[in-house]
Length: 332
Image 1 (cartoon, rainbow, N blue to C red):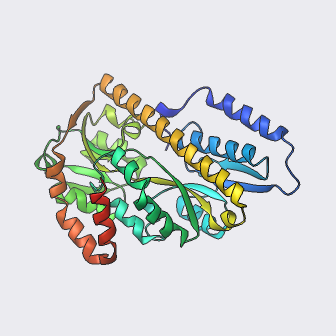
Image 2 (cartoon, rainbow, N blue to C red; image 1 turned 90 degrees about the horizontal axis):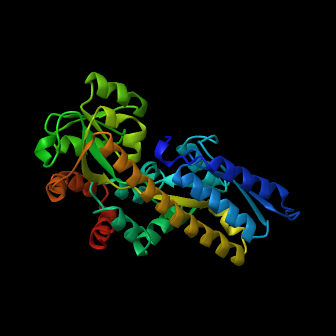
Image 3 (tube, rainbow, N blue to C red; image 1 turned 120 degrees about the vertical axis):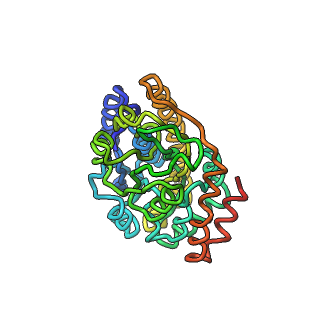
C-alpha cells in the first residue's frame, strides 16, 4: 500500500542517478542478471532498502551480479512471487511472514497475537538464534533468508471510544485481515471481527458499517482512517517480521566471496529499512496527533490473558511448534 509519509521528493532523482550509473557500467560477459520482487511503491522504506541492496550487490561484485528490483508488485502478488523465488525464476524478494504459513508452517507462530512485547523484542528474537531457526525452515523450501525487515506494530483504532481494557472492545465491529487467528483475536476480546478488503474500510468506517480497524501508524494516516476513527489504542497486537530472501538456486551458484557480499548487503539493507521505518512511523504518529487523533496505551497483560484459548488451540493443532513458541516468549 502507498504510504504518504514515506514518499520522498528526491527519491525519483536518486533512483534516476542510480539507474544512470548502472547503465553506464561495463558488466562482465558472464554477469548473472538478478531480478527481485517487491510489493511496495518507490519511496517506501522497504523499496529504498532494496534499491540500496541491488546497488551494493552490483557494485561490490564488480558486476558479476547485475541486480534489478521491480517495485509495486509488477511481477505478481506475494503467493506467486514466493513460488517464483522458490523455483529460481526470481532471484530475490522481500516477503512478509504473514502469508508464508502455507509454505513454511513454522512461520504461522509469528501470526499469533501479542507474541512480541514490542518491535525491539521482535528484532532481538529474529536477529538471534531463533531467527536462524526460521531461516533454516525457509531454506528447506528453497528460500535463503539473509536479513529481517520491520513492518511495524498493528494496533486497534475506532470511532467510538478509547480502548484501555479488553472490556472496552465489547461490541465493536472491527475490520481484520482474512486470517482466522485475527478473527479469533477480536472475538476473544468481545468485539465483532469483520474480514474485509482494505480498500473498503474507509467508506465502511464513514457509514458505520465498521466501528474500527487495526493497522500501524503510517497506514492509519495514509488511508485517511485517522480522519474518521480518531481513537487509536496502542495494543501492538501484531508485529510481523519480513525477510529479504534469495532463491536457493541463485545462492548455491555464488562463490563464497560473492555469498559474503550478498549477505552483508542484505544486512545493510535491513539496517536502513528499520531506520527509515522507525522515522516514518514516528512522523505519522505525530502527524495524526496534530490532526486530532487521540492516542492511548492499553493494559497489555490483560489483553494477552484473553489470548490463552487461542494459544491453546494453536498448540493443540500444531504441537510440534510449542517448543518454538516457548523459546520466542522466553527470549524477550
